[in-house]
Length: 195
Image 1 (spheres, rainbow, N blue to C red):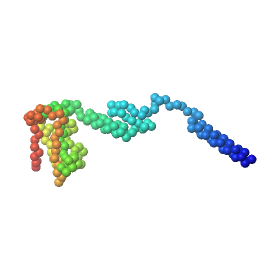
Image 2: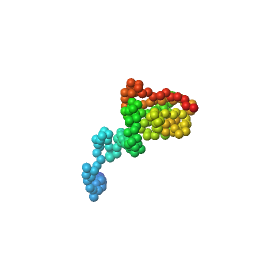
Image 3: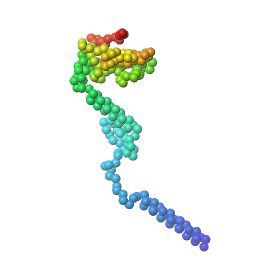
Image 4: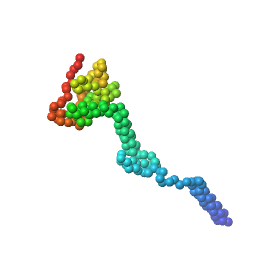
């Protein structure tokens, strides 16, 4: 009789387990479920002009996020340039640069003698460039650039800030140098002390 009691208990436990499993499986799938069309799901990777963008469960991986942010930075830079630089100024810059031996643009950048990186100052822009649209030329077409902790009166657009007591040097960058640079028919002037 004990065997029958054990068999009945085992059968009841097995029946309860099967019923629970069937209920749990039925609960996993909602009664009102609509299959998701594959056309609206996020693919695992997308080929773009930026390269392959990869996703996991609809979220971009770290490399994809960096690519997209880099592209946004680039796009914003182009947008700022195009929206702040008049077409006439751009043409004048190009023609002026070609006359001194540069096909694209020129930049004067101050560097820290200790770190060899761009000199850190309170000035918003660390360099004067031909693309800034703010550099003013002299009547003869030449350009004077002023270096110092404070701007000379009226020369703010041609001034690069330095730090008192800190050593610095400049680099003149000509992007797309032409013959006048190479044959030395045009050369930049020396830095001189102005009192």
